[in-house]
Image (tube, rainbow, N blue to C red; front, top):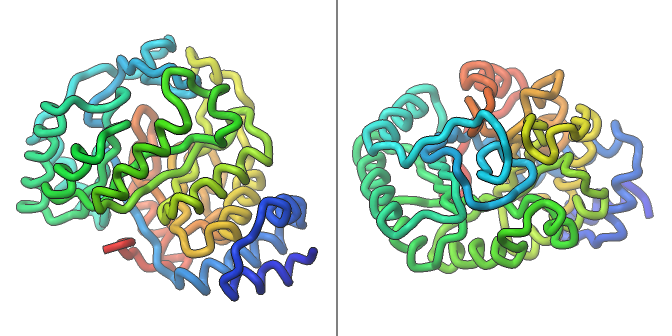
Length: 322
């Protein structure tokens, strides 16, 4: 195998297999990242998909995800509050729209929202679409196809649901729901006519093989928006003492994902602020999307800072799938 040959095959539309991806992972970093950026330019040009999130319901989650500050099984200082009001969600949507953000994601803790909560969120989405006009994504957990359809009818265009890690590694991360539960929710969202945003967290103790297998699962599901989170070790969680990945670690992961998912929008998400360069290197290694502003329970990078970086790198903010 040869890096340049594999690059040409991807540019010609040939999907890479697991063995080829493992080979890529061992290639010199500068050459790997340069070729990944070449693939990004070919399939996505200079488009950059930027979004912002709101933590619309926080804490007291029944699920035992070992990385999460909001799990009731962990002992953290994460805020706890019920579903925010429609007015609060609308105000934040308007603020992000004014700052140039193109997509607004409403995120809630818990395994899934109840039917009554879904109805509340449908009302909020309808008002956002009427008064603000920003594209709306939701991250409401393991919903049914019917619930996703109601949200789509209200104006939602995308559903988010991270796989988090590989099928093999998932039981080491969470035992209160399964990898297949995640896959089923993604398929329900797709069946309802929504696009899907799904990725994972790097630094959970996974192997290189786990990282590649998750990318292959995302490709099989047809996911085109792939958030790449860097674990932010939170005190009080089982992974609170995990060692953080480096800039070079994340650049390598992003580059290999670009080879596996050549036309996807690979989105730097949680933990980006831990990187000394705030993701700049990744944006030259195949990544072409980001969550801007604060994360769910941690401080992020301001939209103003991100917009300046995009202009400097020659990107143009564009919405994906609409």
